[in-house]
Length: 134
Image (cartoon, rainbow, N blue to C red):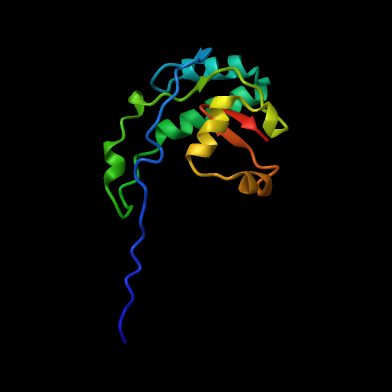
């Protein structure tokens, strides 16, 4: 029995593009209680959500980095270099025509056709740190 070659061709540069930054909210890099308060303030979270975020952060801090995975690549993550919240202040849109043009272009460049977007109706699309289409 001859085994068929099933290699998968992947277009590696499909996501190699950028748009000008127009963010109105930027929590900076690193994750601290101050970052969590900033995010909760911007999102106007109720107190229980803020407390939930803070509790989750304390649990996150208390846990060691997993070392039993198939790869040890996790050890290379520098959490202090990650930007956890960045937003242009855009509210989710209910119909595709109202979605900002740069978000639409992103969907097009990533090869998500209109029919698939219609099929995914009811699913939220996230751009930066906010849902932009739901």
